[in-house]
Length: 231
Image (cartoon, rainbow, N blue to C red; front, side, top):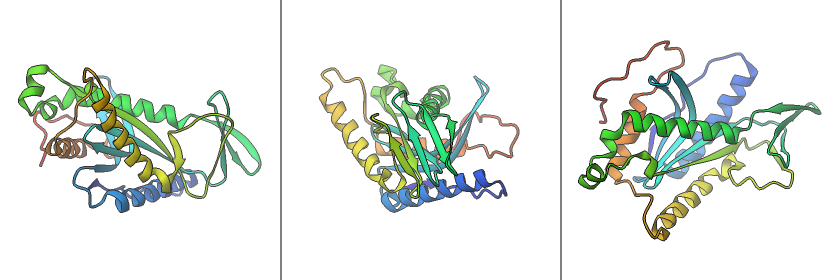
């Protein structure tokens, strides 16, 4: 189910326009794969402000499923990116090489931010069942995974390095399904369960809560409501 679509970005900047195109492309694939799903929730173009640490995070695509969350970072690549054996990223354009930040690490920082944000502001949603209230479970008991989506016309040169997180945009929905299936099996395999599953209604409440906390980039200030709406 799609909870939030990608917001239009009007800009003459070539990089912003290319990034927006990559996000729209990925959102299209996610909608086609999960638009009719009642147990996988998709939030596109989510921007959150964490008041306690005074930081903001932009998440291109967020997948909420019964075992946790998947952050998907879209990257516009019109030619080729190279990832060397040290995990360093190099963008090649017009036969010139230029270093770039690792989108894997970027997505991991976003996932860590999201976990902190949810533990700070959304425990009332997580503890909506008696067992969760009694055992004091929190969002640390769920999985937070990351994927990087490279635009369809880009080329990924993996120089003898395993990068399971990095895939072309059109294959990301399959990777999401594989991750969800794997995480379900991981929970079953745990001799002493370290992770739990979310009830479908809880997934939906969390998805609507996060969407309600979205801060458009043009907005300069933000106040967290005492009791956010989850309808």
